[in-house]
Length: 332
Image (cartoon, rainbow, N blue to C red; front, top):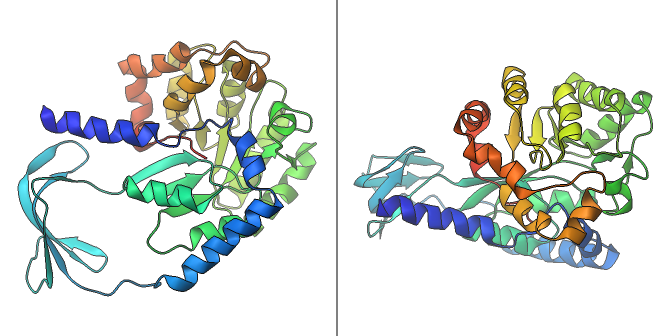
């Protein structure tokens, strides 16, 4: 029982560190102005020059470690790290590290962050997050530099998020990936992936795109063999996102709880969900902030948390993509 409590503490610490909502797009906008971007680029370039791109191949044995396999924590055992392989073959190891009974687990995946500075990568790797998914990019040069840092968290990222002009994300958060009609979808998507983005990011909100533009953007993304992620945090916007057949749903509805019918549709369409419950708790606890980010819907943490409490509903979505449910912070 103690081992699982310890693991929960680790995950809680992970969730609670440097947390700022998708609302921190406001912060990110200030943090990535011309001066800050130049500063970050210099820091990243200097680190790249001074950090070896490859780690010397020295086989290392880890003794007395308890392996977490995704389901349970095992009894103490010994393993070896041999280059990019993990093995039980301990022969010819050059170094030995005593794990002192500690838990050994795979690198964590943070499936929703907003990255604006190198310090965030250093924080992520210090908590064992080896892969992170950046959910927006205002400066493609800076985003490319984040990807090229040996020894830090590996970053996959979206490009500019597609938004409707004069929507909340455009006016409050400064998003400027404007799409005005379905006919512009293919060109916009091509530009995003032309800058090296890994996936497409769309914003579904009460004063955002209609279904036609959402569908056109997702279809254009799929036509390139790529995947799309859609921000949605109220029930009506979620319905639009689900109907578009976007691949990843970012957040859950915080006005009306996710219904059994919607969960079944998400599963049948092979979509996955990244709830970001922890950041929602922070966001909706401030009525002023909540009114700004969702002027047309009354958001509550309880509506989103119902996903966690409804085990039947959770299991349906967990069967689609459990990792996304349990490893997200939404940081800046």
